[in-house]
Image (tube, rainbow, N blue to C red; front, side):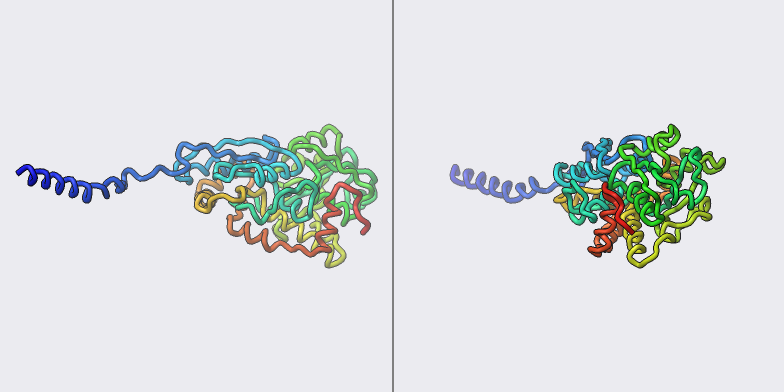
Length: 357
């Protein structure tokens, strides 16, 4: 009897183990693993000073982003200005952890610096993952302060030593201004760098510099009286993409009209290509693909949110010009890179004297 009882207990133990062990590995749907981003903090490293147009654009996007990331993480911003986005891009490429908790928001100068082989570039644009941008395209305008009396293109060509303000060598505003000075051409222009974007206009008002290239929507948002009351003299626009005209400046010549050769037209086309990508949101190389996919999908949903264009315009002062992640990636890979054109634009966009035309 004792042997039978012992056997029955053994059979019961075997059955319990056989049928019970699988339950230890079965997780009911209601107890599924929490999303990776739940309770996490994502840091957006901006390659600019706070308070400018770029900062407002980045914040207009990131205020929507958490709602489309599973787990609804917190997003904070840090600022890492320097080199037209170069410092931040280098950091994202080589120092930021590739765990999905760091996103870069850099200026379009990041792309130009890499293609043109700028000093200090320590990243390869093809290795970043891209989340898109909301400021692709747009129009730029070149203007001078009223006090110096540059009322037409002839005076702009003939007046020596005009001081042109810009953020830094390699920044898109600097590069476009240098291209204008080369193509017009201007007489011994002086380029004054080291400003944050809002500071350049303050410098113009103080008489520290005479002129600048700036995005039209920034001018109309911050200083509409300059246009409405003619308090600045406006001279040239750059359309991005070509043919995209702003209704307030249709009377001004476009930068490409000053080109004389196909090579010069390609110079302008290459500079347009740098800006078409806008101020990109980037992810470090080596990130897990599933986390890249989560963030790319979330950014796409932000851009598709019907409330996003309204909030963007309310905060930034202009309409969103969206480029999706896959479009940005394709554009960067297909950017023209003719050695001759790249070398010439490199000289124009560099810190040295403008090359002879």
